[in-house]
Length: 101
Image (cartoon, rainbow, N blue to C red; front, top):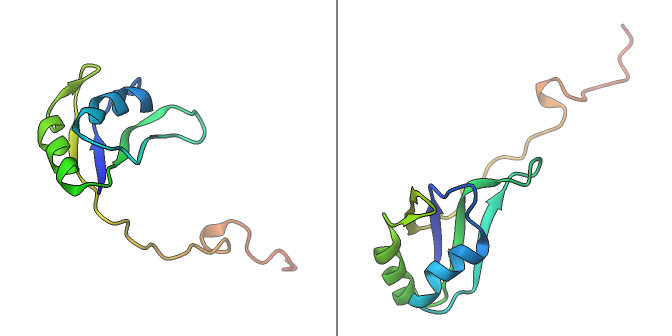
């Protein structure tokens, strides 16, 4: 099961989050998402646990817990919605450069 963990402190690391979830069972992955430009935490993460029962126990125990001064939200992650591909020519970027004005 993939677990969404929100309202994280910007200082929370993968390792700290792993330490919080590890007592509840096996962890496949822990990923605190970071901003590409600043490499700073975006304030949320995904934790993947292969055993659904263990994942539900972790969610129940950790949802509302304070970690690094912030009350976190933990819930089963919803599947990512498909978004239509954006064309580079829409929105004024790029476009047809062969126009003669």
